Image 1 (tube, one colour):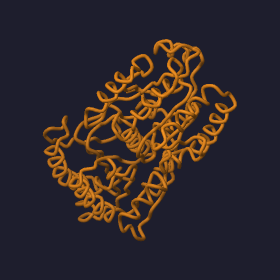
Image 2: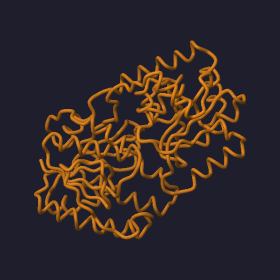
Image 3: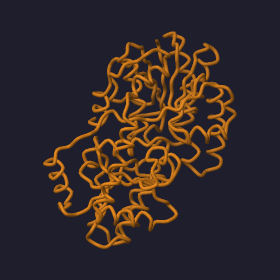
Length: 388
């Protein structure tokens, strides 16, 4: 099957990883893949036909870039679809379905839209959200099939848009396999981070932005007794800039220079997560967070904020904490550090959830897009993405 996909530009984070993984799975199973974006990425194999859409101000990603990129996308997607006789369109947002509207309407190409997060939660700007509401509405109406990353996300969109009798699927992210690191490597990495063997190390990871709510964790560390717990923040800043500097300033104001560690973006964050004792994920909003699933794959006990999207993954109240009651998280961290039975309980519950989300995401995704039975062929690709 000849498949067309579209995305703005290569970005760090789970969203791009999962998109690239789907594209590679398609070509690994013998499908022809045409991918359009504003830049080139070294991650995708040569089997993917990658076409670049030129647009000014690509690096800054300002409004001029988005206007030019959107207009060009209408033209290029139609041209590619017509030239290569595209049979299916698959994208990771209704906005990108909207940008492929011409081949959908004029050439009758069916579109499969994966919805990975709620676009309206990314900004409080009413004008911006009104515009994207219109784009999302059109993109959803134009889709043959809509694939949500979780039940709560599907409920949100069903309330917001008249989805009607369209084919709707719930298809969460998954874990390929348990990630194992030997004790020697773990000890060596902790030493590099200046974390003593007896110190209790928390970790968290993801794109550094307000939605990830890492400042909440820094405040929790401040409430804990000094010299008992350290926090490792794995990740780099995403657009808009300023959040990383704010977090570092907060760390300075709280006198936590030696207790809060920023290690930047890592090709494989699992190495760092596996070196920690407890993973904590305090997001205000999510879709189906890859960072949390990566943490579960490491065999490290996990705690997450009590929002619907994270509850779908962690499920148990013991693994959840309220963002309105910071002391609840502080208490759980204290108990995890000092009470072995309680720590073991967190570990066992996290293992149950890891097993629940372990599965063959690739073959299921191929079947959803093409209607044909797929086979998993991209575990090596997933490692390639992490090590680029």
